[in-house]
Amino acid sequence: MKFLEEKEKDILEYIKKSDVQKHIKPKHIYDAVTTYIYRRAKRLRPSVLIMACGCLGGEERLALPSAAGVELFHTWTLVHDDLIDNDKLRRGEPTVHRLMENVGKSELNLNDYLAKKYGRDVAILTGDMQHAWAVTFFIETATKVGVNPYIVLEIIKQLESVVIANLIFGETIDVQLGMYSAIEGFNFSEDDIVNMLYLKTGVLYEFAGLAGAMIGKGTSNIDDDEVNAVREFASNCGTAFQLQDDILGVVGDEELLGKPVGSDIREGKKTTIVYEALKNANEQQKNDIYHILGKKNASGNDILRITNLFVELNGISHTKFLAETYIQKAIPYLDNIPSSKYKDLLLQWADYMINRDF
Image (cartoon, rainbow, N blue to C red; front, side, top):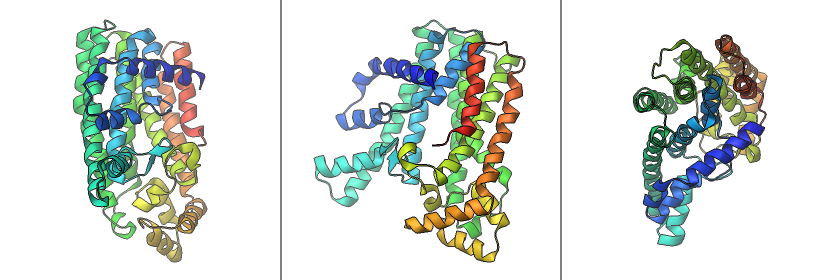
């Protein structure tokens, strides 16, 4: 946690010094683009990139621009994901589309319909700007700290082809599954759900491990044995992270999480928690789950009732077990990586993935 706090300061300081900010206009776009960035956050993905760089012998300063890049890249995916899910909170404050909806009402005197449209439109544009800003940070890995441009080009190529394609693949599957009720939508396997989680979350952690390892070792070869080991480690930990995140989205503390608890239930998200609970449920319990899952106006009592069913029917404990399985799969990938404080930090991060309780 001390390392994460230190890196948050370093990353935020680097972002704040960026010349790109002077080009982000008008003010509403600037405010929307920077709001998530300047809220308190763990900065896990950029920290993983820095740790991956260090564990293969690279200096932290070499990884800092790319760490800022992966943070901006992650941020645009959050803005668009919040828009798709119509979430209200992110990091304890209004999501971008809700923030700009309120701005539309208070500053532009828009009616409810137009204010909502304004919020959504600005959120789309915000994500586009953040995506572009992310790429400029990766470029600075070559132009500002002197990493071999061929390494940087390979990193950007991976990000803008493999990573973004997989992220959109996973998000599209998530959207498609959300179109169906629980009764209609469970003609797929647990492996399908976990693969979706890998595509939505594991892929970007995998990229952070890959990019950091390439910078640290000074190679553009994505198939290098040590680079691949760090990448696979980060990939499996990233999938475990999302499994644990699904648990916290049901039984976590909303104030500590900084995002709505129960929103996944109201959105009808198809998680391993739901899958396992339905597998073990009797007909009455299934009907209770079917009645509440995907119910946009589900009450607090509805959410509590379905949460208790998820616990009773082994959904929570089974998903916890799956997360632990992915961590155990991840750890051996670092066996042949030389000992260092950065390797120790990566292993501590793996433990954090499944033991965080907020």
